Image: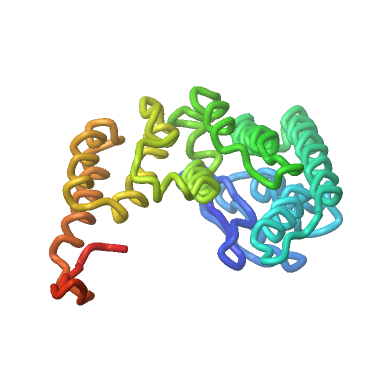
Length: 270
């Protein structure tokens, strides 16, 4: 199966799933992208699952889950502290209810043979994953429980080579790192480096190293690379991190600090 993702304002909006070798007709219908497979017989649901979902389950182009994320991110990014607990709890409950409704809707399409088993499982897996994530949004404290989320996902149905790609796990790890940004600057081991045996654990390790190495001294970075290198997914990731660190070593000094009668030249990343 091949997934095409339609993005709007850098945000993933719709996901379309096809079989390798499909010939597609791309169009616009009711101001939304519309796909049609023309070299084999399919249904509109099979080709446009998420567009059809929004039309049949929601009165707008945006899901209840997207509404909750928008409100959450707006509240977190706000310079002025706002008390939106009531609105956030309402939005979270609506998102949860809508995802359960979506799962029932997908199951009904599967039973009616309007979508294939693979397509139904793909979108069901995404909905179940979002339901799991919602548990860790602590509205009362305005925080996302990163450690509990990591513990829940490690070894779960999504922590496998197949489902790992279905739920945009790379984006989720980026979100986890953002929610626990202090770890990146800590220059210490982190929850992101503790369990590196599974696809999810290895992705967390790579992305954590990618963000943390620039804040270490060159010597410390080499120690970390030698220590964690064997635990990465493949040698290509290690080579990338190694090259990134070496590139900084070769930089010319761009700061000249004077103090105590000495000139100190710095070329380390800040």
